[in-house]
Image 1 (tube, chains in turn blue, orange):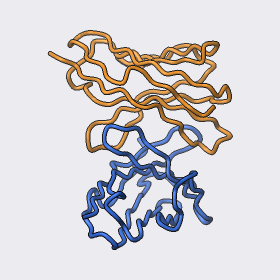
Image 2 (cartoon, rainbow over the protein chains, first blue to last red):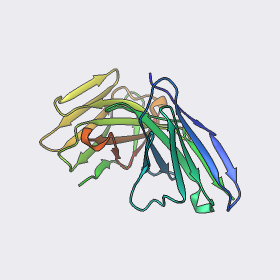
Image 3 (cartoon, rainbow over the protein chains, first blue to last red):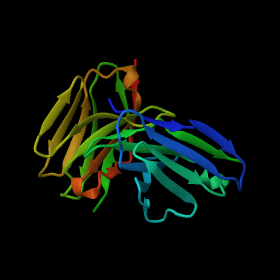
Image 4 (cartoon, chains in turn red, green):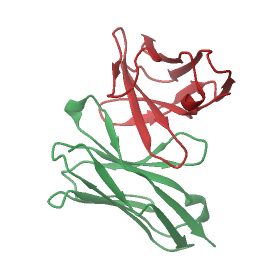
Length: 113
Length: 113
C-alpha cells in the first residue's frame, strides 16, 4: 500500500526558533499533499493544501507567514513553523494520495518550550 | 454545510461485541466516505471507505452502512477485540474539492475483556 513518512517524529525547540517538518510519499508521486494539526483528543484540523510547483492554499485562520509550506518535488512537502511559540505545540500530520484515498504520515510531535 | 457530525464521542464495548459509530453529513455533493483508525501518537490509517452508489461495504470485521437519503453512514465492528481500541474518525470528500477531507469529531473506542 501507499506509504507516507514524516521526519522528525518528534522535536523539541525553544520559543522563537523555527522548525522544519518533512513529509514524503515513499512509493508514489503526489502533486497534492495536505497538512493537518491535531490537539490531544481532538479531530484533525486541515491547515493547508500543498501543491507541487505552486503556492500552498491555506485554510481560513491559518497564518501563512507562520506556517511556511514548500512542495519542491512530487514526493516531498515541508512545513516550517517559524518563530515557534508554546501555543504551536501540537501533533502535525501530513497526508497524500490519489483521487480519493488519502494516506497519512505517522505524525510529528512538536513541543515548544 | 461542510460539517460531518460523529457520535458517540466515546464507546465501551465488551470483547466479542459489536461496535457501532455513526456519522451524518450535510453536503450532498460529498461522494467519498472513508473511515480512519488512529492509535495514540500515530497518524490515522485508512480502514474502509464507501461511495454513495453502494449501501453497504464489508471488509473482514468492518462494515460501512450508507443511507444516502438520510445523509448518514455508520461503521460496524463485529466481534470487537481489545486491539480495536483506538480513536475512529469518519470523513467525507468530494472529488471536485481536490480530495480535501472533512473529518468527524472522532470516537474513542475501548474494548474491554
